[in-house]
Image 1 (cartoon, one colour):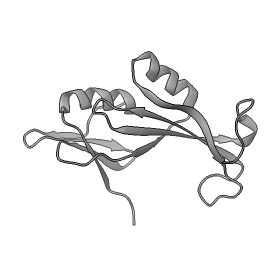
Image 2 (cartoon, helix red, strand yellow):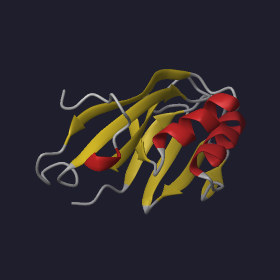
Image 3 (spheres, rainbow, N blue to C red):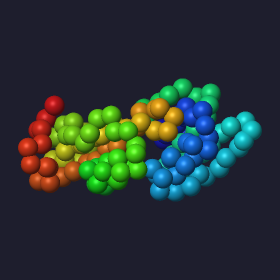
Length: 133
């Protein structure tokens, strides 16, 4: 069963549109105002921003976590947890075998937490990075 849509709380659609367009690298797919619904396409999954939605923790994949976090910090985005290795995949159950799963957490324009996730090959771990967790 595929994921079709994820809803996220956004009390200011203009502010949220600017933030998510920059974060995702593309403009919204649709906006209906009223009633106040903003949609982005995230690799075939709709991200709905809506004042009546609860806050959700959304995990977004990135190719270079350190570079993306540095870029966002430079734009004034609040990084609540810097990039770090969560664990290494010993098998392919939850990610590519032999890769390290790295994450960072930030706040969006509406105060929601967003996670950025990178699957880094094990041989490309940063020096001193934690192994396993």
